[in-house]
Length: 167
Image (tube, rainbow, N blue to C red; front, side):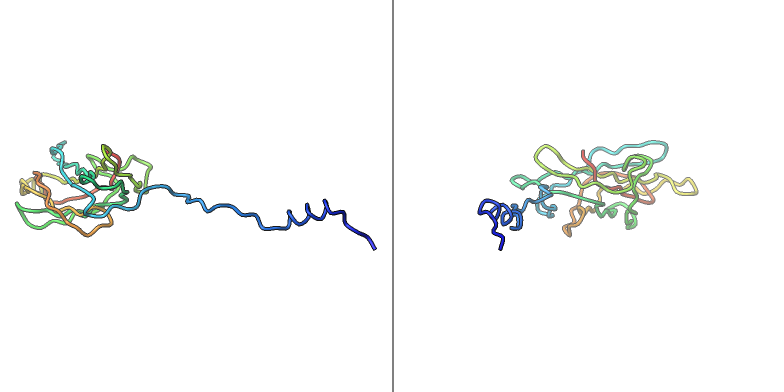
């Protein structure tokens, strides 16, 4: 009968034993933002060849922890004319994702690093009549349910909104 030397037996047993490794989280990004973590404001309107645009800024509320936003905010017109629902588009005349980028990024919102999304429309209708001037927008941050009224001015007959990006 053949015997295995003790040192060899230990080495074979060590190779056959399961290897333990700690669980490491692959994604260290903060969790998605909640409505209460954000303050939404509008920058001054931009214009170009009858196009109108309003950059929306999503910043952390005082004392809120960093969080992430992905996708499109919900945007509806407020006071000033008939109700308009913003159509979600990747890019438009005044903003949006760069050409060739077709997937909205996940943006980390942290102190001093807000996210931004552009809302845009056209100031005249198909018959070249001036569109209504709205004095606010109703905005819901991506993947949240809390809608806020954001004071701003935009003259438009239709709205579109682009995904959030880093500001």
